Image (tube, rainbow, N blue to C red; front, side):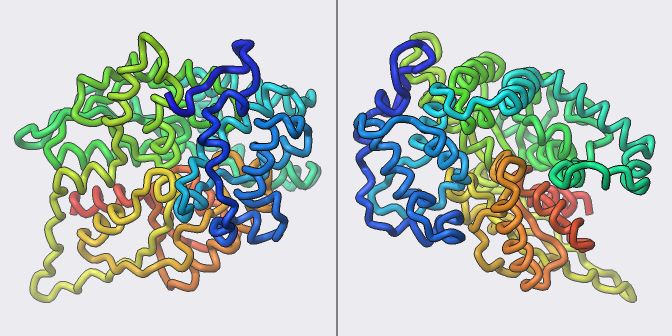
Length: 447
């Protein structure tokens, strides 16, 4: 299979050297990607561009360059926003190159440091490998918030004693939902009216803890559109966090678990409402295409995974009824909404029109275009944690554009973007509502 891994961790050599060479040498170095790359736009340094990074990757594949700390740091300076793929005339699969390059970095150990190794071991290899552990952490954090301890700590001034970076990380602590997806959604939810489709819903990791209400809204919207929804409890992480951070074997393991929990031949579609997860979920065959047990199942899975906006527009979504005002009743004020595109939804999955089409169906909403709507907000998985300076620059740029629209609500289809914009607006004392388009649709149905 093109691009399939001959795994370094399995003792078969380099990730980049064993990637199909046609992927490595496809870049024409034309430079059309340069204006779309946030890190190159900010620095004007060639190695901070897709073209520059691909040159470094190819040099390693050709044995002209050793994997070094400089190479490793450069691969992690990349946002992985994939905007370069949208404009590339040669169709370079930068997503595949990017993941293999980071896997190369981790296999080589050039960035190994005790603190970094400990954080990765606890977060990537332990916490996000078991959803029960993640929910336990979320429950503890929720109790900390509900008891008022977080508010007390923040008002006490004790945080000022911490290093500046720890203060910034504490300010990014998300609000944990009162209930997780398992508590809000039954394992099987019947369609309202005649059943047209049988679908499965992926509830996610961060999405489950921070935005379980979006999962609930997704089920409501699906059932109102003739879908019977299967939502198994205790789901696994999709593996995108692991693949994007060089942990290839863990990503493969999680992909197998997903295929066992969600047999793709049992559903008309497998629904995701997280842009970043969806971009990864649609390419399980890249990890398992050569697997004698899971290969065929992975290819069927790839064809069944649908982003929620994509699926609704594909099956013909039911428009909410208009909110007619009775005599003497004030007409509802229009909500001014602008739309920020999740990078992996727009550049990774090429889904740009469907969310806007869906928003236009909702009564009492005025849609205004967002300048640079497809420009990264700086979240990029855990990028805002490991590269705060660049992430904050991008966030400030995004919020400035949102302000310019005059919108009181910004819609976006990815939990990372949602949290990034929520935290950014909060830091500015701005009561901006940040919401998933599906929540706006569900609210309109309820009205």
